[in-house]
Length: 147
Image 1: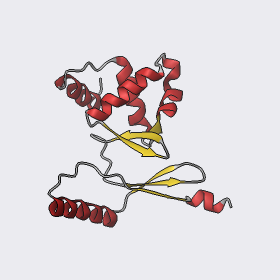
Image 2: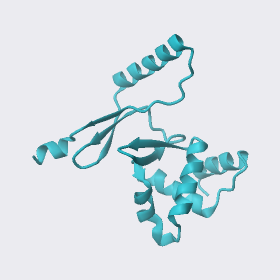
Image 3: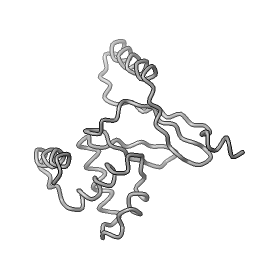
């Protein structure tokens, strides 16, 4: 098992779960995709490995509970991306209303404002903010060119 997967295995075991072959396959698909995937996209990529939708849903639920992945809900559809050990910085999501593509907006200045806003909300309201989702919706550059 490669080094990165051993970290996940330890996390599972620490929390009393088995890191089964099926969970490993689902997780590897998300890691290797390096993008946002819906349940159906994951299923389409691994269905030839005899893993059903129910197993994928259960795995995603557990991954989310353990903080391994992040679930992003856009237009009543859930997408999943890596959260821990991914090396992916804080970012904003952009959804194209024409092609349904999702793009990560990684801008250091915006991220700094994002962090400042979290801190201000926490301080002014005596809260602990654990997660924030910012989703911008519009038309991507490819769709704008194809008008």
